[in-house]
Length: 339
Ligand SMILES: *Cc1c(COP(=O)(O)O)cnc(C)c1O
Image (cartoon, rainbow, N blue to C red):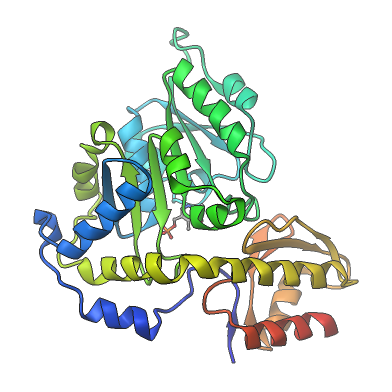
């Protein structure tokens, strides 16, 4: 039995999902004639209370398109030092949009409205880059799956409005936050100009992300997606997986969260662990004491067919997901206890 806890992207489609994919009604989505894609886009736009949504092959491309929609070359994006758009999108913000990032030194990937205010360059001071966009992540990836306080996001929205800044949500794992905080997609739609969500993480789809926003800003999104090479043809086979996931897997996220908490509590009691970050959702980040190095610890687990990630800076990461089942959980907890 292989137990892969490196990421929630490692899931494979279930038989039920594969079945709807194989039977999807498709058309050429570059002509907007794929009825399954159209159905998924309409459903997600509605869910978030927005007019438009657009299907993307990856979350990276959806985020990169959003950055392009909100900025001009030379502008500056305000985000956390842990942000995926800054750390894990290959430098795409500068490559695709010609923008720099002003990094906020946040807490677990999150920051306050006051920190945003302090990060804004005065618009008349033409020596500095023009601040035009604030981008946040919910849940935070490098921040350990942390969920934002919605009230703080509302305050940041006010700062954005006052200072004429766009507000983008990298919601790759927003589904996890919604499941824990009992908030609605519509709440998020009301304060963000653009939202990207992944179908390929907690929801178990093989591929797919969607960018959501109102027509005014989304009008140009399809052109940018085309430029980035993301215009796909009979892609309804993949969108069908998204529709299936929205119907069948949203309710299962809570099990990933419970398992992550179980893992964290075993780690906390283990003498070889020096610290475990708080667990809000499906990500567990922890550090080791002197008994093992990160590399030797990962190697030791690997010999038992268990895979976890090294995040650098002494941090190790475990991510629970749809394909991490109860028997794997049992085996893994036992393995951690005897190390
Ligand atoms: C996974 C992830 C993305 C997008 O990743 P892709 O692999 O390009 O789909 C974006 N933001 C965050 C926070 C992520 O964790």
